[in-house]
Length: 389
Image 1: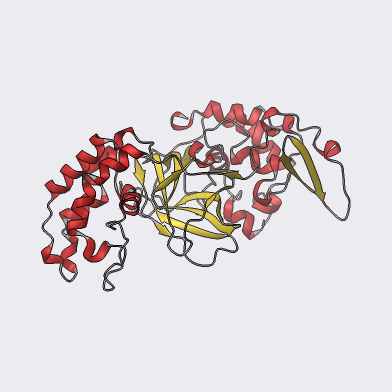
Image 2: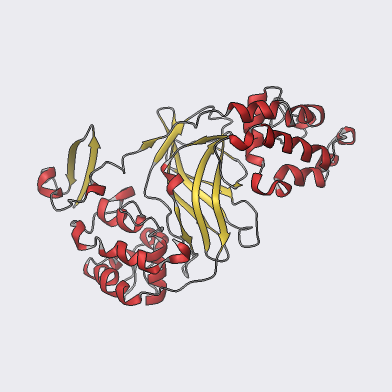
């Protein structure tokens, strides 16, 4: 039996999916008396774009944009050269150009930005007419400095590291995983990807189940910004913080329990990026409070027969559940896997808590009484002090 809660206008409604039986919400949910579970925080968050930063836009118009128009429109105008597959980041429409270019700049390390790399390698020489481009590293460096100092430094952050955009074109009538390459800051990240399940419904993109995979070491991640065509959106992913570790089975933990949505602009051309405040490799770790893990977490896993789906203890499990959390692991591996799903948030919003208690993303509610695992599970996560979280 699975109970789902829908909170709307502070009135609670609940339905129980079973073999035709219906229980009242009060009968089923009364034990879950935890303020954090009663606020509707798992309702879909409809995000809107951050307010446009006029100072940054005006500074761009007077610095980098003229240089782009003088040098890059052969391939990167609104109607790009058919011989080149190129984004219109140098379009005459300065708003279009601004929102593309903002995803190519790492203001914390400007010299490592994508645009500087393109200039250093003179990538335009590979294309017809490229010999006519006369810009230099110094020209672009000066333009970027003018853009930053002229007003961009006062704009809301989209993160220190921003991924390359990924196209959202195609059939998104059902959930489909959309992936972007992680910003290639180090060898740890070069084969890594960040992905979300995505679909379109009623003129909005919906995003859920964010993952990082393909990384070589545990990676510390903090605050993930959702960026569509260069515009940043305030979403619950902004609150993500945690450690991602590729487990022995090849899986990694989901980073957020939330589903969020943003408006579609143009489904044929929309480009999705993600920014990160913190994204770097960290040393491998071990659980330091194994006794509390065994007492509070592992005991509950066994009592609730989680291995029936997730494998382990002689049980085969199911492919879908094991693909997201494989419990067929030794005690140390299982502890680390559960800990990374705690996400350093210390709240019921973390996947560690939200999935079994609130039935997020179709997971069954296997722990119906919050007092059975709270606050003990959260206290365990805190006690681990995982890489500073």
